[in-house]
Length: 335
Ligand SMILES: NC(=O)c1ccc[n+]([C@@H]2O[C@H](COP(=O)([O-])OP(=O)(O)OC[C@H]3O[C@@H](n4cnc5c(N)ncnc54)[C@H](O)[C@@H]3O)[C@@H](O)[C@H]2O)c1
View (cartoon, rainbow, N blue to C red):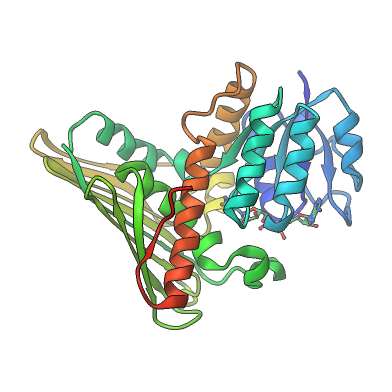
């Protein structure tokens, strides 16, 4: 088995290491690369050498798979270097902070003999996957509107996350998952209108689509103490409706323990009948890594999480930010 490297030893570096372990690849994690290595800070990577120099990984032909779990401003340069060295890269969302940088990353992937998948993990939750299957089966008819919500307490593990110039702020760092979902169902976004109660308050964003569909995203990253991480999605079609709701202490804790302390259920009500199901346990990060590994090892095509979708989601995030700033609907440009 070829080796794996993880760039970053923080929150997501640990989530990816646990995910690689859950995919049976813990022993293959050869390096953790980070500016200030702390031996043992990524316990799931028990054989890893902690290093500071990305060049070691670039030059090590044994390393074929790399998880990039660093602060967003570093995504472009690290990923472009890895792709130039023919690595298969699983890059944390958001792909970049600007569409121009995202396109540089995508171009580097197109030229590489390695490959790129953006880790839009929401696409790998069982419930989100179930709703996608139901919609693709035609059971809901033509989708008319999609509503997605995401709430969490304020993230406290990293200071850079609180700096909008580095994280992109809530509408980029957090809401991107939901914009990605509503785009996936409704197609080409054309106009975005966002409103927010205050700079740190909840935001409501309406997205209009070329085919006439309307999407709505509700985001809040300052939920009261005791409110667990929660995300929901609702599909409304001409032949039925579908709903998924996830609620746990944190998405990552849920995936590593498999223990769901909150709600994890979906239902479909359609002209074909009604189904209500609970999901007993889920491991979306593990499933994401497994999919990345399988696809990377067999041609590097990532239909479940294609890079153009990650860029389209970023475009909506940036238009939502512009709408908030300007207080009016903002058109999504064609490029
Ligand atoms: N998919 C999800 O559920 C999810 C959740 C949280 C964060 N994220 C994304 O994951 C990425 C990382 O976020 P995080 O919360 O793990 O941040 P973090 O601050 O917890 O960890 C970042 C790590 O990267 C290291 N680092 C910084 N600059 C580096 C460089 N140039 N080279 C190598 N290592 C470097 C830091 O020392 C730290 O170890 C961000 O893009 C964030 O948006 C995704």
